[in-house]
Image 1 (cartoon, one colour):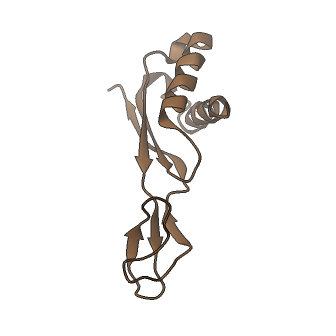
Image 2 (cartoon, rainbow, N blue to C red; image 1 turned 45 degrees about the vertical axis):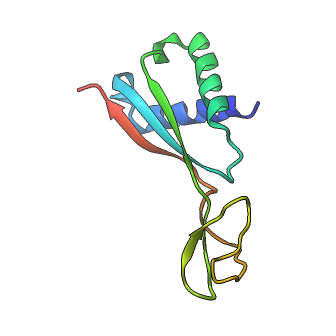
Length: 113
């Protein structure tokens, strides 16, 4: 289960980025592209397991938002959503230029005021 180290890295990053406010974090939103090979339910399960070892994190809500795969077509210049892993634009041209879908990032952090 590679999600446990990912969740640990998320919280290590937050501790490094917000050392003086880390204990006031109430919610963390993570964006995961469909191609990043991360399942939201497994991230949630890994977070729940982490809380067992680190109960001081129990007050934090973790939300994982899945991002669709977006590609760019060099033939017609448009971007399009990749559906069922068909990297073919509406104009019929294939494309390998991925604009979105591979990322895994912390997109939002909310703090207790």
